[in-house]
Image 1 (cartoon, rainbow, N blue to C red):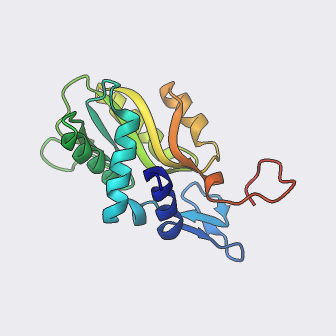
Image 2: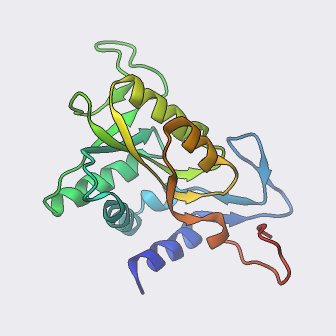
Length: 193
């Protein structure tokens, strides 16, 4: 089994829930019979290894010096990539974008050792509307860094990709899409069941 297939299986086992009788309220405000709690996989020991390896493979060789995003979904991804990159002798630093600026000291929005003008990748576990990842992109740009890649573990295919493109000029890359988790019915015209 490939590492990509292994991570998908782990996400299906630990993070994915289908509950058609009681739809979930999503952070976007929408409801859905499908819920993905990415942290149940990104904080798992094997999940972290797989996420680090697969995301690093997507980002290496692109001149990226740091990876991070809005706390909390991006934090384990950024750390997994940083650890993997160090083991591969191609270090990429991790950073965290706060939801509120630090209330004391430097009062920064971003935590981590970023050099001025760093080329960074912004990451997220699950993208629905794209609001969280776009906020991270905005904060990173305001701090003077260049966003050169935007990567999610799962794109729910609900407009987040378009929001990311409008905010960054970049296409949202993802390891998986919601359709990778949902079986299609015969005759279905591209919509999750």
